[in-house]
Length: 319
Image 1 (spheres, helix red, strand yellow):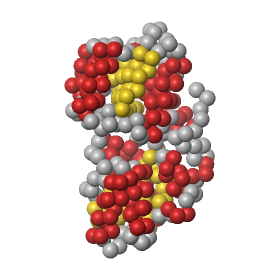
Image 2 (cartoon, rainbow, N blue to C red):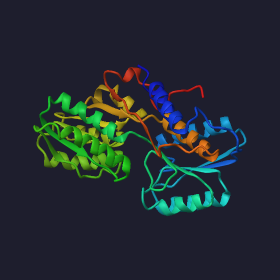
Image 3 (tube, helix red, strand yellow):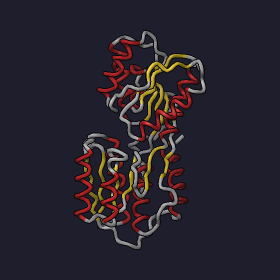
Image 4 (cartoon, helix red, strand yellow):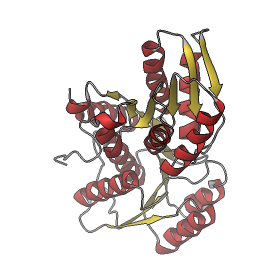
């Protein structure tokens, strides 16, 4: 099964319906685009930015696309948006640092005639947002847990930074567990910071507090790997782990017998997200606004059994 191409096809079909076109109408020349991502040290964001840049330049070869990382500093992202406005970019692709606090900066860009498309997480006031269906991702990852436990056991939801993507993943997970009265949630409020180190530190606390754990859902792959490392250090192997991302690191973990406790990850399609985001920005500039401001990219569960067929973040594409 070719996950990524399948999801991309679904996503683009949805985008075509939303915009009323299968691709951008090239009536207006696009000369420059600004992209602001959480961190250029995050390979997922680099892939998103590079893919968006390639697709924009395919449609507008002379366009200059500038990508910057705000390093999870909201003030820095606001300054980046100001710089994009001063440079007169045609549209901005934005991974928002805060869904509400970034709104004044978005409004300022729009007042200057610059559309803003949020990606990966939503932002209040953006012209459109393109994200993984994070409720779905949390749901399918935790359904795997419920099924594997036959609806009975002690589980942990390892939380993270309270951006919309994380909140939605936890919402989807809890919706599953709520259907099983014999599943007990030991903890659901610890913020592991979305990082491997954070997952390691928070998991060490769980392993001290809870003598028996059956499964842990982590809100992303770095936390999953950190949690697995903590378990190995503590010689604890009675539980298993699922997460969200479908990252290259989790692909490797799902193939590694030494990390056997990591069982599954709900994928994010880091090809469809920038493709739909870039197309939406180009369409808005050319007067085609999406009928829906929130465009959701479906998620598929990657497991030890099917990882060999998974086309992940680094898959090559023709366009």
